[in-house]
Image (cartoon, rainbow over all chains, first blue to last red; front, side, top):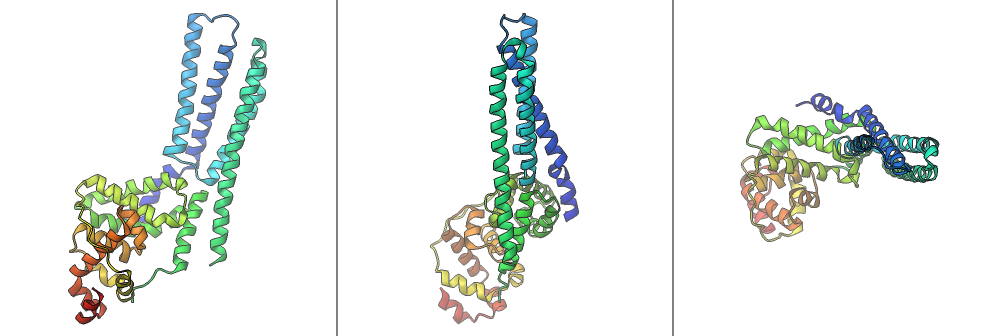
Length: 151
Length: 191
């Protein structure tokens, strides 16, 4: 087995596109599930059974996609330092969009404050993960600089 | 004289690992070029079935690529990758033969041996050793891991590694005596 064989075999695992896709799928799934739960939980009257079943199914689907995204980026295609920063930026952007959009969408049900609270929580979580990614990359760059200085 | 791995080589290897952890895709080619041969050699000597070696090596590289972002100490990469390699090979065959550790031996004896033996000279002589001894000799002399790293890879105390090296040395005494130029009298003084 040559170096080229190994690299070819690892190509899919090293693909940045597969990581970006996983992050996007996870974020979209999480946003969908949270939005539906927000709408559902703030309905003034109990929903018809068929609607409740539909909401439940959509929440489950969104949660499953979010879980799949997390699994891919932690186990299947774990994020390297630069990938983590890209993912952190994407998550923060998604969370900001959610924090702005969700209150507007749910305003009619009077659940804008709850949506805003959830949105801000997501923004905070995404920002923390972004900051951690930046710190991790900075640590590695410092180690690289130190090794290169001693060469 | 045993070729001691230079600090420069270690730094270069660690740099490649750091570049991979940063996410530089080009660095993975350097990583594979650096470690594929010793890895394949190590696995092929652990396995009875040559046809399975490629499968095991593929599995190792997948585990490396998937686990590398979580490796805390880039300088510990050699011990880490050979730990994975050993685990993969053992999982595949499940016929690892554990042995009773011998008494620890004097560090000085190993320092002296390190100074006299050449990795290339040992390479041809270790094939006949039992698996446990062959493994530590290969990791220490051929792949150039420290005693501490070999202990981490094999999952035994450092004293056990030294004992296995000592036992291997006794088994290899005639060829190594010949290769290293150690007179029989010298050897007896080390024990």
